Image (cartoon, rainbow, N blue to C red; front, top):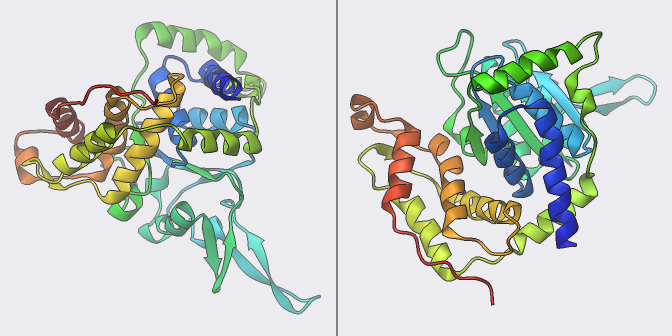
Amino acid sequence: MKEKYYSDCIKVLDEVGKVVIGKDDCIRSVMAAVLAEGHILIDDVPGVGKTSLATAFAKAMGLENKRTQFTSDVMPADIIGFNMYDNKSQEFIYQPGPVMCNFFLADEINRTSPKTQSALLEVMEEKSVTVDGVTRKVPEPFIVIATQNPEGSIGTQLLPESQLDRFMICISMGYPSLEDEIKIAKNCEKDYENVRMSESVASVIDGEELLNIRKYVKDIFIADEVYDYICRLIRATRGSDYIRLGVSPRGTIALTKLSKAFAFLDDRDYVTPKDVKEAFEKIAPHRIVMSGRASGERISSQMAIKKISNGIKAPGIKKKK
């Protein structure tokens, strides 16, 4: 089954690559986070393909997906649902919100109020929603991909630290290279008469297979030396002069899970320090709060994490016996 699982995941990457051109690293990172049971935040300027990436993944994985465009007037009930009184039955009936699906796309999440942003907290962590005291589970698998525009854009609100911590990774897609932008310009001719490029994406797996792949990824071997390396990286964020608030234990769990997923995508059943380093640079930058010294020296969170990952000595590779 391992060969089939790996082959199917590579096919998913290929299908998404039809729509999102030249962003193989971003596609791989999102796939790894999905396999590691994580949620994804995509932070970048408008128009670089954030929404296209999310919708392509939903289709390639054959998951029921719903999308909410977050604006200033979106309320929590618009996300998690509400109870409506039914005159015929003379009782309140729950009207499901868009999060009651497998794959929820929260588009431009930082354009809405903090109150509405917080509506996602329970469902992202507990995989359930509570309306009028009644808790309901969301379908499995459940994945949130949120997009946001950079801090300082007109009409945006800062995401609270508690919500940022619930995203396994935060990635930035960036502008395409010249060669990739030429490909995008040529492909736009195919996007006409409401026939979008995303419709060319084929469904490779389904929700049941994704759950089975996740179970396999959970069992990937990590040596004690690599566990030690994981924890030393995390703890280094709590003692840096550039970081005021380091990565929490939730981040340690995220790093462990994501390292296993990266190992799987490299067709291995054991984790190497290379997997850990790659995962660390994906899970850590959005979880830390920079110090005044970092601001004064113009050190970004990505630069601080890169400095830590380069400064911690990696152990030797130890394969599973």
